[in-house]
Length: 183
Image (tube, helix red, strand yellow):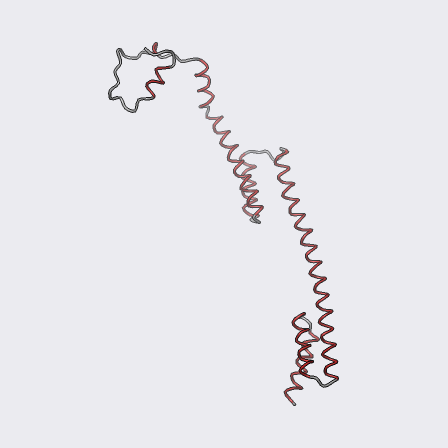
């Protein structure tokens, strides 16, 4: 005889039916089922509750994948995962999701400002390079006045190195090359 609830415990430990000896067959009256166990089993095995929990967990995974994709700059994947998460669990109006959206949009705004600052810095550097390139052109012109063609060519080449788009330097190089060939 087993105490209440012990028949299941004892039999569940068996790895096979070999060697089991019962003095009598187990009847329904020998197995006691407590009402709270039945209630728990009904809740635990509730298909709707299980589906809801799985959908909630799926949305969590999708939100995490969306955040990860955003952080890696993969915006197509970000949007796909984000929309799947919203579809899995419509919680766009919840504060946590709104914070996530604001956080990610703020990153975009920060990057936009950083990009603007970098463009401005690049423009300032470009202006400085043009200034230095003009100085090399002036030095080249001074060298030509003193009939120092090779020094003038080196100065014009430095101007082009600093500012490859500087047409004035290219023209002076071509003109000087022709003069040096004809000499």
